[in-house]
Length: 314
Image (cartoon, rainbow, N blue to C red; front, side):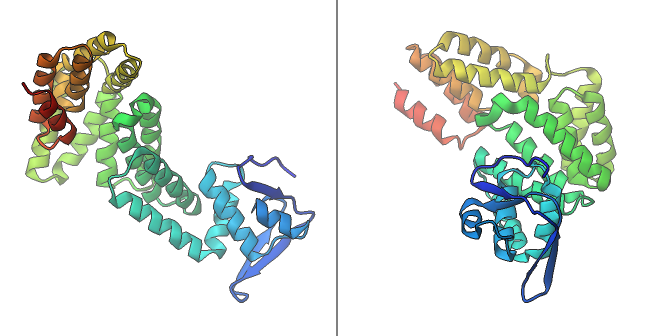
């Protein structure tokens, strides 16, 4: 038996010979070959060496794919899931929709990516799923709680978006997202090419914003370093702040804010908010108030900044 990927809670059954699993009153017939069959550990123990049935196979492949859709034999498991388990496929689709409709935290974005990867395995010629994975990774790559992973996350986003567009070249949202990723990574020529291709399709307001970006790229009015480097720098400053190194964190954050072109493209009220927290920790409430007002000018609904400003008013 070929080596399978170790997964928590999964035990593999090694078929001594190919066998068939039937279910749904004989409507489903799944041919199992020599692949190791993932089973939930409790199911494996109950079988006592016998071949798994329809329910055991379904629970095992479903848990294995949700745990690691990149595991070995995942393509085969996904084919079995699509072929014989419509209730699990429906549950996956519902969870993807639910996670896509809410402003969820990063762990839920990771979960959405994993679920989308299962669908991408089931429908490898459908560009929708890699495009959705890329879009979700773009979202994750710009989240403050995951900035330390920005570089690797955004390169993965580009990979999935490129794959999706190779299958669905006219997808406007995918083109826009990939242009954004390219810009964040400092690939300005690629970003410009995609934005130029989008211009005829955009409403006037959006077209004006894109033309403005294209003009700035043409004039060389760009961040000193690719935006992703600043995102990683902000993550580093956050770690310094947590370690109590407020002076160093302040220096890094002020250096980021000093790049007018970065600030223009990516206004982030969280940066002056972090600076305010550092100032308060160093006894500089007056400077903190200035930073907090700056954060609130960027985002008047920034509740944490308003609350902190109220606490130190005086």
